[in-house]
Length: 125
Image (cartoon, rainbow, N blue to C red):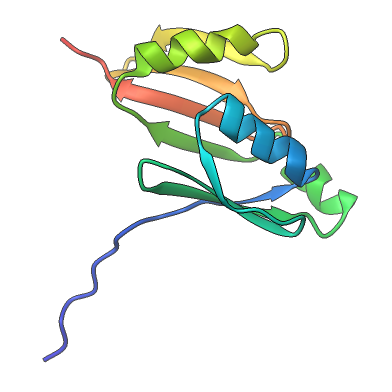
């Protein structure tokens, strides 16, 4: 009998226009570490979680992707992360920390490729 398959990790794969700009954003703003870095394909990691980036095949691809891609990162300790992220308000579109009706405290930030990154933590009662 075969052992059941176990999903161990899910990593988004995002199309990017400028790899260097994207890596700088995820490193400096969200605290990820590049584990693979090339102009065509890169990976960043934080606390065992990874995001993969692929160089977009064309500007047409980016036209389709911009404003239509979102990822959600659930964290522990959102308030300390928010203290750091809010210092980038002059450079990126950011929605301030707020509480959602579904029990999460979140902030939103747009990456250089107009991917909307939701960062959230269960709201403490």
